[in-house]
Image 1 (cartoon, rainbow, N blue to C red):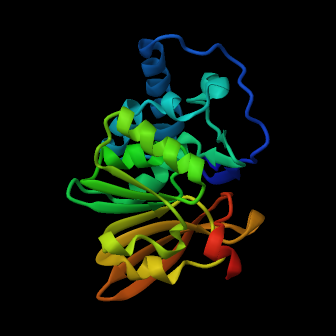
Image 2: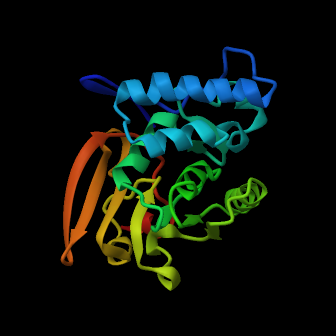
Length: 239
C-alpha cells in the first residue's frame, strides 16, 4: 500500500484509517470524489493510461469499503476491510492495473480478492477476471458484491491462490495482491506466452513489486517499486 511522488516513493503503514471529513451522501458527491482522486492521486503521480483512468473514475470504491470508513473511500491510503486485510490505496490499484497493459480480449487471474475492488477495475477492462480469496467470508462477500454491481465477468473462488486456477488457465495476465517470499511456480506456469504478471515479493519492509513477462517460454523479471502488502498465507507460508 503506497503513495508515489515525483522522484521517490513513500510506503504507507497500515495503522491509520480514520476519516477526517464528511462522508458523501449522494452518488454525485461520490462521483466528484472520484474525479478529484483521478486528478490528484493518479494523473499527477504518473498513471497515464486513459482506459485505466476512465475506469478508476467509474468504479464506485465506496461500495468496496466498510460503512465506517466510507468517508475515506477516495483518500490516498489503504483502508481496513476486516480479517487484518486491507483494500489498496487508489494509486497502487491503478498502477498495477496499468502495468498489465490489459486488453478487452484478455482473461486475467487475480490472487487476493479482498473486497473485490481490484477485480471490479479489471472487469471493466478485460473479457474475464478469475479471482481467488483464501478467507472464506471475504470471498463470499466479494462474490455477492460483484454480482450485485453487475460484474458478471468477475468469477470468484474461495481457496488458496498459490496454485492459481488451473482449470481455466492459461491467463493473459496475472495480478497478485499479497506477498509471497518468492514467485509461485504454478502462477508462472499458468501465464500465457506474451503475458505479464505483477506481484509483490518479499517480507516486511523488504518487499518489492515485481513485473514478469513471458516470451518464448522464458520469464523476464524485474523489481519496479518498493511496497508493503499483507503476506500471502496458505501454501506460500510454507516456502
